[in-house]
Image 1 (cartoon, helix red, strand yellow):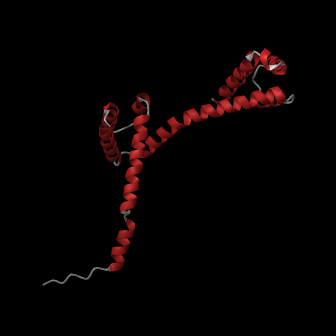
Image 2 (image 1 turned 120 degrees about the vertical axis):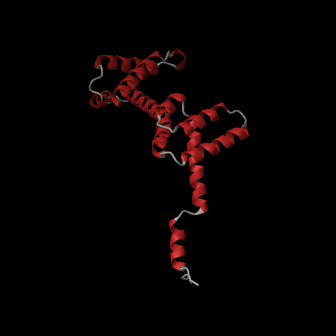
Length: 180
C-alpha cells in the first residue's frame, strides 16, 4: 500500500493566500454589476462605438427593454456575469468619458462667468484676457466690457442685461475655441 505524504500546512496556507477571498470575489462581482449598470445608462450611439461581445450587447439591449424591477435586477446580474470575460478597462474609460462631459461643460461655464465678472470689475483684466487669448477681437471685447459696466451702474429696475449676456457669449465662445 502506498503512503501519501502528509500535506504540508505551510504550502496549503500559501495557496490559500494567493487566491482571492470569497469577500473579494463578491466585491469584484458587485463592481462589475455597477459597471454594467453604468453601461446600460449610456446612449445607444456610445454603446455601438464600444467593442462589446455580442452576448453582452444583447444582454444590455434586453435590460433596456425589460420593465419589471425583478427582471431588471436579474438581467443586471447576468450582465455582471458576462462582463467577467470582457475587457473592462475600455468600458470603464467610456463610462468615465460620458460622466466627464457635463462636468467639463460646467467648468467652462464657471470659467466664463469668472472672466466676465473680472472683466467688468477690474480695469487690468482686459490686458490679462489678451495675454491669455491673443486671437480675440480687442475692439469688440472693449465695447462689450464698457456696455456691461454701464449696465452694471444702472439701478436694477433699469438694467436690461443684454450687455452682460453678450459679454458672456463672447467670453464663452473664446474659451471653448481655445480648449479644442
